[in-house]
Structures are given as structure tokens and as C-alpha cells.
Length: 398
Image (cartoon, rainbow, N blue to C red):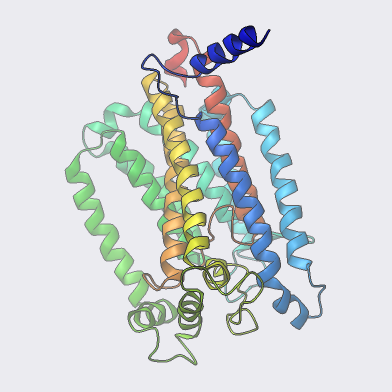
């Protein structure tokens, strides 16, 4: 009996190994789910710690923001389940579906312009007890649209300017509406993602050089002609020259990292969250993590983000090998969104970039970001599940 048990266990071990006898890596799906799950748990822990002083100072219950974040996660999981279970991938890449999504997104962006300003911006659509940031939805819709466009118009994309000029009409409309809010950070992420998808789709280098120059000039003008953006850009160069005014947030964030050192001062022991770093549970949650959990905690967060991004890229590459180009570009675009937001959020927390209102995916407090990020994960999982099942003759539709 013992020998038979050993034989069975031995055979099962070899079943998990490849032909060289080396154990294979976990699947992209397993790594993605485990990493997102860990990020959500860490998010709840750090939001609970960072938000308590802020909540109490405004007469709320201690765990007000923790409960909200948990609610956002539950709603996000439910919303993610719906497209994963009921929306066929083929339907997403139909022209009618895409233009419907674009029109709805544009309409919602227009509606936000008539809303009540929050911190000087009109980025949120009021849904009763919940405010939804439409720019997060725009990121997902643009990815799906561009992923289909570069396949459907592949000749135009790879030969001449027609591809860029056509897509510029859609991106131009979104750019105009996002600048009216204003939401410069989301705009940068969207434009960067579009450029990245066009690059891997084979667009000529000369187009990137020319358009990069144009976008660079427009970006400089957008910063220098608007006073608050110019102030942020200049304050980032020396974060301690005006610590009581323009450099307040960034300086406090750097102080938090400095206090944390390698292992941190201990969970719940942050000083900067005690009304020194404003709304520390949102964009600057990583700084509080650095203070309480130190270099170790920040490295863990960034490692989990890297695993999520790597999983998206693996799913994209596997779809690419099967010539399912639309699904490959979609997964790639989602990975680029996560890369951009992770880098920008971490860099602004650490003083490597000017402060910008972009969340760390799956980590920072915020319902809109959490909801759309989880829907993006559901789309990745759907691509992973259905990609091997699609017949070769049908791959051109995906």
C-alpha cells in the first residue's frame, strides 16, 4: 500500500513537471488571482490604519473608509463577474458595441462637467452615496476600441498616417473632455497606452518621433499655461523649499518614507497620518505604508503589482501566439494601464515625479479605480479561459 501511494504521488509530481524534469511555473491565472487577492487584503489593512485619524477629525466612525473600501471591493467583484460570465469576447470587438461604449463614456464625461466641484475638479458623477470617476471607465473603453482598431485597420496603421489620424478623432474628443474636468493624469495614461498599443501593432517609428514631439510640446504648454500645474512641477524640483505651502504633501510623504527606513515604525504607528499628510488613505497610501512597514512593505506592494502586470503580459503573449490579435492587444493595454499608474503613483510618493491624482491599482482607497481594475482583471481571466478554446479558423475575429 505504501509503495502504491508513493508511486501515485511520484507520478503526480512528474505530471506537473516538464519534459526536462523541471517544475513548471504557476499559471498566469493563478498568479493573477493570488496577487490581486493579496493586494486587496493589504489595501484593507493599510486603509484602515491610514484613514482612522482623518475619519475621526470629520466626525465619522473609525472604520468608515475601511468599510467603504470593503464595499467597493464587493461591488467590484460582482460587476467583474457579469462580463466574465455573460459578455462574449466576440461581442466586445463588434463595431456597434464599441461605438456604443464610446458614446456612453463621452456622454458621462459631459455630464460630470455639470456636477459639483470636488477639490477644484469636476471628475465625479454623483450616484447618490457613491461618486464614480468616469475617466476610469474611459481607460477600459479606449483599450478595447484601440485593440480592435489596430487589427481592423492594420494596413493603415503600418503604412502611412491614416491610422493615427483616424484614432486621433476619438482620442481628441476624450482629451478635450478630460482637460475640461480637468484630469491631466488620466489623460497622460490613456495617451501613453494608445501609443504603446500602436507601437506593438507595427506603426512606423517616424510617426512616434513626430507625434512624440507634438505631444511633448502640448504637454509642456498644458503645464506652463496653468498655474497649479506649473506650481506642482516646480515644487517637485525642491520638495523642501516651501514645506508649509506648495511642497506640503510631497515633503510629508518623504518624511514618512524616511521614518520608516527598512522595517518601518510598526503597523498603526504612523505619525504623518495624524493630520500631517492630508487624506493619506488615498493617493499617498504608499507613503504611510513606507512609514509603518518600511522598505519591506513597499517592496512587497510593488512586487505584487509586478506579478499582476507580468500575468497580464503572459496572457497577452499566449493570445498573440494563437494569432488572437485583438485579445492580445487588449491584455497588453490593461498591463500598460497598471504599469503607468503604479509607476506614477509610486514615483510621486517618493518625490521622483510631481504630485498627481492617480491611484495605485488595487491598493489606494477609491471606488471607481477598484471597480474598473477588477473588471479589467475579469477581462484578463476571460481571455485566459477562452483563448485556448477558440478554433484556428475563428482566431481572426478575436
